[in-house]
Amino acid sequence: MIMPHGAEALDLPVWNRASDLSLGPRRSRSAMARLDSEVKEECLREDLKFYFMNPCEKYRARHQIPWKLGLQILKIVMVTTQLIRFGLSNQLVVAFKEENTVAFKYLFLKGYSGVDEDNYSCSVYTQEDAYESIFYVINQYHRLKNISLGTVGYGENEENKIGLKVCKQYYKKGTMFPANETLNIDSDIETDCTHLDLQALASPRDWKSTSFFRLEFYRLLQVEISFHLKGIDLQTILSRELPDCYIFQNTIVFDNKAHSGKIKIYFDSDAHIEECKELNISGSVQKNTQYVLVFDAFVIVICSASLILCTRSIVLALSLRKRFLSFFLEKYKRRVCDADQWEFINGWYVMVIISDLMTIIGSILKMEIKVKNLTNYDLCSILLGTSTLLVWVGVIRYLGYFQKYNVLILTMQASLPKVLRFCACAGMIYLGYTFCGWIVLGPYHNKFVALNTVSECLFSLVNGDDMFATFAQIQQKSIMVWLFSRLYLYSFISLFIYMILSLFIALITDSYDTIKKYQQNGFPETDLQEFLKGCSSREEYQAESSAFLSCICCLRRKGSDDHLILTN
Image (cartoon, rainbow, N blue to C red; front, side, top):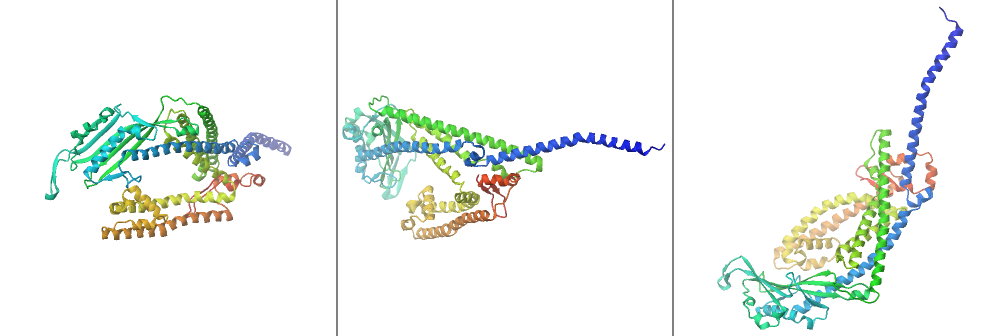
């Protein structure tokens, strides 16, 4: 049966309309998904751009008040003021300890000239001088209250006794005849000690005549005299601070281990600060202490607020990085480069967090020291000093917003990996010279007697310091060693100054030239930068924040160039 043209014409449009109705929902769902993806991409792009803005650009874009910037400026002023005040107080403490040590040397060391001989205070060369020096220490201790100018008194030792503890070390037994070149000695070491209290010291003839003070110098190794003294530092009152009470653990050692005819006398005074038992001070000292405690508490509040804000920024940055990595992997089916991932970790915020933690801990210690509950000045000064250093280094971040300053920062950051690798290689050569100089020149030169002094001497030579004195002070007792010292010093100076130091400077210069070239010809773009440039309103956005794209980027490695991370 043949269908008429009219019916066929009527049936065909009906079938097409049914097909269109079935495809319509699919197209609408696809269009909606595409629109949703574009909206997410645009939101992510705007969030990324806002994250990498500097505080001024954020304020112009969304009128967001730069709280962190204001806190950092306030923190710089307050932390620096706190450090200066604590530094002045710490100087008084150190000066009091050092001046007391010098005073004790004059009081207890017979014939002390005021200048130490090498690493020991003084020396004796006869038996009579040795006896007189030992008895002089004991007699001066007994007369301390009548001769001392300082505010010191007798203190109890570890055994809760007041007085002197005298110990001597000697070989167990032996005989020696140098003229006949014969020696018979037991190498075991014995130690005898005696305690002389104030009552015993009142009768010098009795304790001097005891067998303990009959010394056999050919067996004697050393005589050690130890005693404790107490003192009060009154100069802090002039600074309107509470005074400190000290315990001085003094030790005098007569060293005869070398048996060379010279007994070296060492004096060591270890000062400990403790809480004074009773303090009754009238005046404005107590009020000044309260003001300082309030100021330290305010510093802790400021640093805590800075710590919270910077920690929040890092948490938000990690969340933003997670969004970007997921989006990039979903859309482009590949991972983001490591350099782009590290762009989300703001190293300045990490440094600020470390600085805030150290300032908070140091301020708490300072408050405890102020009320005399703790006495650890050294730890507190290290924490406050390091935190202030990091705070001032953080100012470089804000200078980086200006192009001329940013060149210097980028050069330091770009050259750092090369410099570290170069220093690792040069360090091997440096260590070789250090060990060689110590073992060969140590017995003949004061600057080479220990590994640390050798390293310090060589570092000074690299910087051109004290060259002639290092050459001139070598002892000419051995011609072979003297010739070796010349070869050693000439080769070290020539190698490190003319070659290694020049290469070190060349590495930094090369990084600087690279940065200047990129600033003239344009920086290589990364995945993060290309994604940020995808916005249709890029030109309008750049007019509002012109420094943005120059402040965030990371350079890919080309040839021998390292990753050049441009700070945001």
